[in-house]
Length: 219
Ligand code: ADP
Ligand code: ZN
Image (cartoon, rainbow, N blue to C red; front, side, top):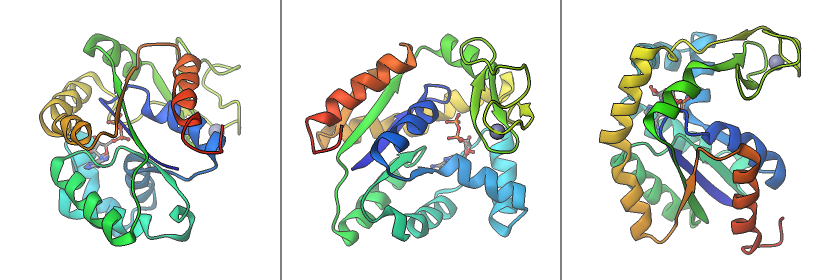
């Protein structure tokens, strides 16, 4: 299964990705996670992308496209993958298509999560993530058992550095300008499925599984 998740920041891509990854046993490939990891390691890539991410700007296509070409060529992506946060510009979409063609594979579906801006902002401001294992939480809707502590590993829960009001506003406007054109791009390819991202996360997960259920032997 080769899936792509699209939507504004806070639309719920990451949450669904975590569920889908287990259900379909495919790697969750998130450009945002890869960049954050690189920053943590202070690698050459990390140093290249940090300033963009902190401001809520997109990392230049030249950097992102190359990182993804390498990532998708890895063995674990052979039988499927779940792309989250890539592509995010028309150029990245075209580059991805070239890559898929070269690898002689096709996307199965593109899910676009649609959510109103005020809900996006509320969601992102309440978002917390485990410093150690990366598990996601929310102060209202997905509370850990003990405040500030990860249920999975006991790590400390923190806000992402780019989850401030100013940066969120910027990320949403970047999304509107640079990423939205991709919706039409995938609509034309007959791959797009629109989902109401303001719904309960389990409900949305069931909806996705229903759509995919008809496609192959997984469930
Ligand atoms: P969100 O969807 O909440 O903004 P992500 O973790 O997907 O969170 O992305 C965080 C940041 O990482 C973006 O604001 C951007 O700086 C960078 N980034 C992630 N994916 C891409 C991409 N495909 N192209 C360029 N920059 C990206
Ligand atoms: Zn943890």
